[in-house]
Image 1 (cartoon, rainbow, N blue to C red):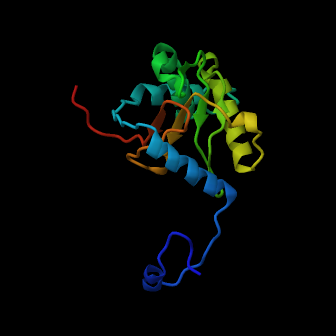
Image 2 (tube, rainbow, N blue to C red):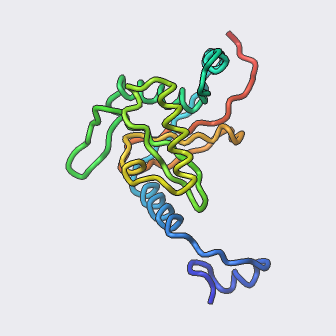
Image 3 (cartoon, rainbow, N blue to C red):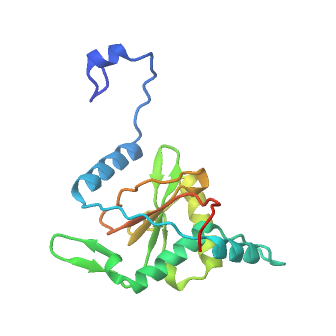
Length: 197
């Protein structure tokens, strides 16, 4: 019997294949993202950001004597998004049929790739935390996610998401909003280029 959703005639035209059953996580992700892409109005905005000052500050912080942590670009992005949401509270929202929920704190969901899918652990109240704390929490949550040890309160909820594929050299991509959140930021790779000033 052919896999559901593929016509038997088309299957006969394809090369040999191995059937790998979908995990429960993969089925849930497919169902939720399909519903979000279909039901949530998406509009994509793209800007380029000069990263020179951030990269210099990151090098200084990570190069200090006795520093027992390394700040990533993603840690800066998490902090910047949280501070921006405080200044732009209309972006830190969730939609319901009866009302728009405006959140008083920014709980930032960060996309983490795991075997069989993607999960979004949350840095709670990221705007009130320093970079070292965000860095430590992000590393701990990402490790727990990859080990399958996240507790529901560590990945359910969140007020805004970040999906960063820059470390993979991705130049541009559009993320799907993580319902019921109101927005998601897609972060692509930094690159050196000539800039006219």
